[in-house]
Length: 495
Ligand code: UN1
Image 1 (cartoon, rainbow, N blue to C red):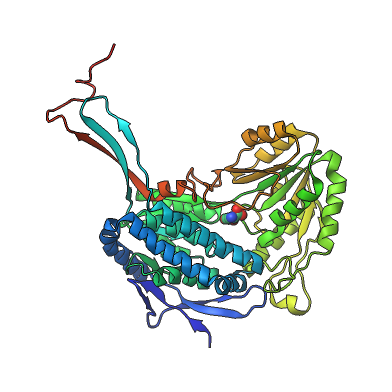
Image 2 (spheres, helix red, strand yellow):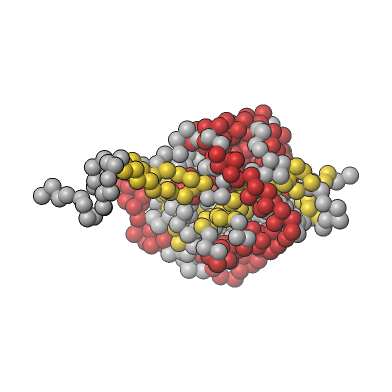
């Protein structure tokens, strides 16, 4: 029998009778994982109301105490890391080492945010008047909606949830439907940690029903969304109607610039991991290799040779290098881009769905390399799959021009041994993140994460920036002069 899950509202798992349901599937084998409720607008509203009721008491809970609950949630995740990693791998398709990485990123971030409970720092600033004290404090926004993608099905929800919780907000969490089982594990960690009822609520279902309700509802004061750029734009516009803070983390078209003085074996490992890790389904994935003409052919030969021994297969098998893509939708979208690439560029490697035997049950796409001029669709649009566009350049200036000439700006990288050029690139690359001698993936939780251009709307997740996302700044003036002092009018000039 397929395992069934309900909604988590007001601290209880409830299975509404006669609910419409959907199932998630293992993208490597087609096996059904579990069944979930496709929630109605009324059910979404009930979760918002539960979060709204829970808000005053959670806001009053001292932040260090909120932090203790987070620490317990992190401990729960740590104790069950292997089990949850396997669920991630089975439901989403990333290889087990990366499934473990997903859970580890959750643990790291929840622990980091627990410590934030003893900071949540404001400022003290001098007044222009005597006997007056000026400061800022951070306050929660209220009910926030966390709408999350499937590619990091525990880490990205935890980036949002842990930051929102430590800041004193209450939450309605709407995960991507195809990784709803992972979302259950995220919620269970906080449930096991003793989070008070109503502080975190899980509502599964479609974006067009549940997501739309969360974004439109007046009691939801902020929306944090990670996903595709078209949906993100829609979320932003709808949120704007309610004058809500909308935080967006959207796509990328992340380049690795490989200069002629680079350490090629090092870069080879980096490009392979950046382009084909998580089957290329990271916002930060290396989707463009901007390759200096002097090392162009030798590097491509190294790359394709290594891919010859790359193993595709069931991501639970530790010998496998790359698993399936996450869903039939993904497979179709990626294969459509590969077809476009075959028209406009030169296919250098791969370029097909993997079939035969067990592969027929899953969504496997070969690691694919195109040699392309800059400006083609595959060189500029986000594909979100194991497809790398290689672009030949003449020098550093051209490399940077190409790197920057896309609509996205999330991650970027340069491989060079020239320290001056490395520092130059840190300034020149138009992206929220730049790596030197490392691939475009692998951000750490204690630093801000996000990007420019169509990657977002200016906010950052993770690091201390995560707190800014989920708090309001209150400015406080304390006048202890015992008389009315007028700013701008009574302030004496020292001159
Ligand atoms: C994403 O793909 O949306 O830097 C997040 C990385 C991971 C996070 C990626 N730590 O690749």
